[in-house]
Image 1 (cartoon, helix red, strand yellow):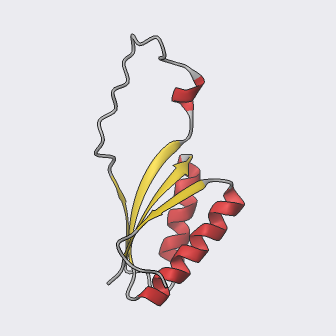
Image 2: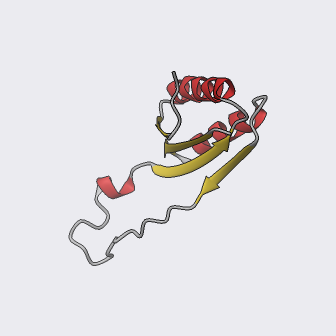
Length: 99
C-alpha cells in the first residue's frame, strides 16, 4: 500500500483545504497530520528574534495511505492542482516509484 508523505508550506487554512481535499478523494485510506519532531532553537533573546524571516508561513507534514499506485498518482495530481490554485508550496517525499 503506497504511503505519500508531503510537506505543505502555507497557512493553517491552506493545510486544512488540502486535508479536506484529501479526505474527499475516492480511494484515500488514511490522512494524518504528523507532528514536527524537529526541535526549534528559537531564542527569544536572539538578535534575529522577530525578524520577518521568523514570521513566514507554517509547515505542515501530512501522511496519506492509498490502495495502489494509480490512486496515489491521482492524489498527487489533485494536491498539486490545489496547491497551484492556493499559491502554496507542497513537497512530496516517497519511497515509491511513480512511473
